[in-house]
Length: 183
Image (tube, rainbow, N blue to C red; front, side):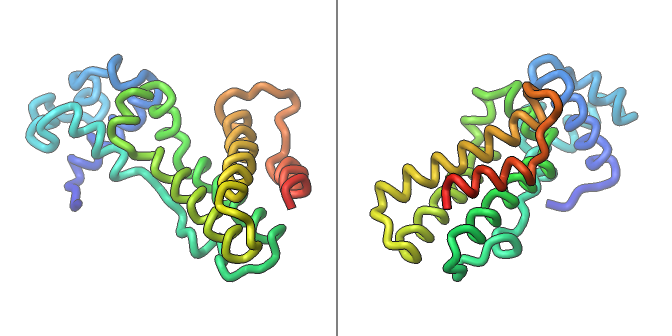
């Protein structure tokens, strides 16, 4: 979708406010003030607050190219796992505000299937890889993929949102340990 300068200003203001306060707590009046437009301008460009919310995700969601990170012809499981782990980490880093919004607005996001579509895509590609390249039964490949991805997702959640541990762990060091356990 093509956006005007005004639309882009509204989207940017909305992204910041939704990430900071959540969808329900943000008013179109606040968005208008933050983007230096009239409130009616928001409705002219996006019709509804709900549509604006969806457009924020559609415009800002960043999905790194799977093929840039992951060579599905790779036979070395360790290399493949590192590429999956780095892909997930990049996905987190590029979408931090959207993950914040997702955490705050879980019910709304689930019905829209925006960010949630990525883990399933990664999981399915991992399963196919494990079945085709390493001869794992599909059920074992499913369990393996979910366990590996949960470890990497948990690490990313702790690094960027929960910040449970001090000192903050180094992603690369932790990924080394995770891959070592799964190779």
